[in-house]
Length: 222
Image 1 (spheres, rainbow, N blue to C red):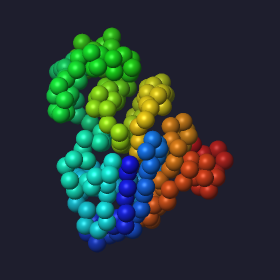
Image 2: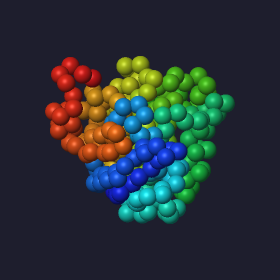
Image 3: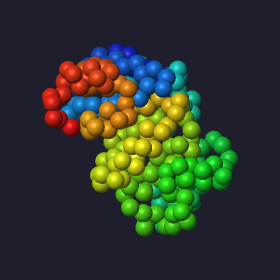
Image 4: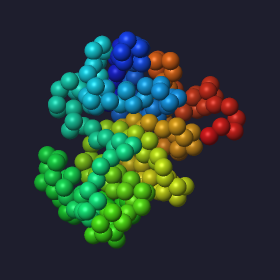
């Protein structure tokens, strides 16, 4: 579903990614892991076509990301995203749903808002929402788009333990989705993911979660 081959990228002659290969199969859930500055954000931007590919290839759902058709296969939730605080939760859903290639479906939106525990607050201005509620609304939009591939950038960043667990439960409940999730929390990687893509010194290695823990993590680390 996600295929990266022989990808290289440099900022001002500084190599950030060096001959990166990554193949994520259908329904795998892969954590993207690396120290700050390892190149995780760069890799995600290259995947989404936000940075130009100069060397290497990327395909998403079998379609090169140099073509526009790949977008129908992919939904992306950045670490920081912009909603409209003067609108309600449902109004935000309607607006962003209108950007998709299908007619907004109120019944489906309400079903999804139920699934992320926002149905009762759907007519409240999101200016009154907590950070956890805003993050769940972002996930609701991703679920509404109903794509085969989901890319998440630190989806629990800045959340308290309760809010974090709510987000993880929603992601855990997803079925038949291929997920790439940038994260630095081992506990949530163990809860959510089947594999780990580890970026270090510009190169990437893919492991099962157990392989990664056994090779890289010392006892007691989180």
